[in-house]
Image (spheres, rainbow, N blue to C red):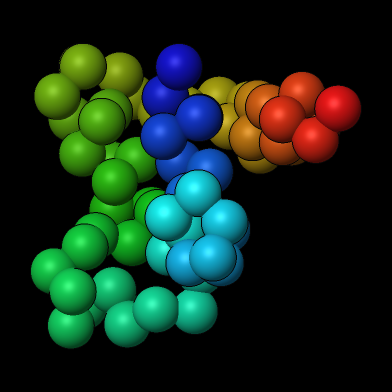
Length: 64
């Protein structure tokens, strides 16, 4: 599930290898928006409708 992949942008490095607060440019890591745009480009999607809902849902599932 793509939103599980995107969750690391919201986590601090101490949790599941999170990226929050890190200098992504210095690390050569795309921003969350850039990663989502690449996904859309590679899969032929126009957008990721409901992305925020899916991220929130999966965060809830992970926490429970």
